[in-house]
Image 1 (cartoon, rainbow, N blue to C red):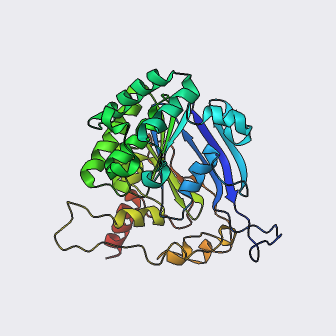
Image 2 (image 1 turned 60 degrees about the vertical axis):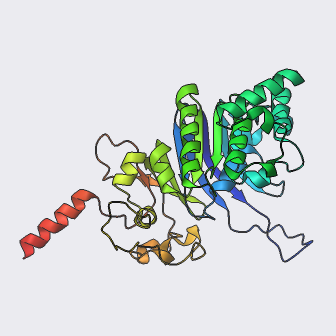
Amino acid sequence: MALLEVRDLSVAFPGGSGRGSSSSRLSDRAVDGVSFDVEAGRVAGLVGESGSGKSVTSMAVMGLLPKTAQVSGTAAFDGRDLLSLPERELEGVRGRDVAMVFQDPMTSLNPVVTVGTQITEVLRRHTGASRRAARDEAGELLARVGIPAPVRRLREYPHQLSGGMRQRAMIAIALACNPKLLIADEPTTALDVTIQAQVLELMGDLVRERGTAMLLITHDLGVVAGLCDTVTVMYSGRVVERAGRHELFARPRHRYTSGLLASVPRLDAPRGQRLTPIPGTPRDVIGWTDGCAFAPRCTAASDACRGSDLPLEQDDDAPAGAGQHLLRCAHPVPAPHDHEQHDQQQERSA
């Protein structure tokens, strides 16, 4: 049974004609009917370009969106719907049972409060530890995430730490109360590759050793390949494909997923081979009610991709034993056996 079950999550923000407008009109939904599960001891990846709705999804689950946001659906954590909890009860869950590593530690950490205070306040708030015990535990947490001279770092401010250390301090805060669920929003952004590898190894150890459930939000498919068990691909606020990691990388079926993979540099590619970018920009979309939002950027788009709402369905061509492979596409990338049948037909025709 999943520790976190998100069902039909939708988020919209108020529109209007300008400042002070009383219009109740809503803009296009930032998140539209998103569903996914996160199981204990496993990592679920949420993937997509900037603007696809990944971070808004996580902020909605954590109850951190502004009050003006219109949120619907459910996010059942350990049997309780986080979206319907009163704020006081949610504060008891957030930071203790569900923790989050934010995208930019420089703006997420309080610049005028020492790192030690920011860790100890979490421990004192949720565990009732004394000031001395909380400070001792804070030093151990910094040491656990690989920060040298942890006792001295407790007295320092965020600007005195490097980018990698600030990210590790954010992870230490998130791990302070041994959460059951960890949401990591682009945890390796702006880090060099060496520090990225260390941070990802640390988070992987957390999942394996403590059985923590993790929702990893990223646009980096290399991170997904090394850490995630299942992958949910989002585009323009909706899920367009979901599968196990190995299945998704071996047989991407949605044209957007295939485009993302084709645009990633490969070490085994021939020298001088050009990358294949996805044409257009994330702004080139049509409303999902008018068809597939990816249609303006898709080289295989046809009239079937426009004018009707495409459902998220099980891929009928998924091989036996591959598990669930969901797809929202009128013209999916041909499965490997489809390629073979096509080649055979061409040979017979010749």
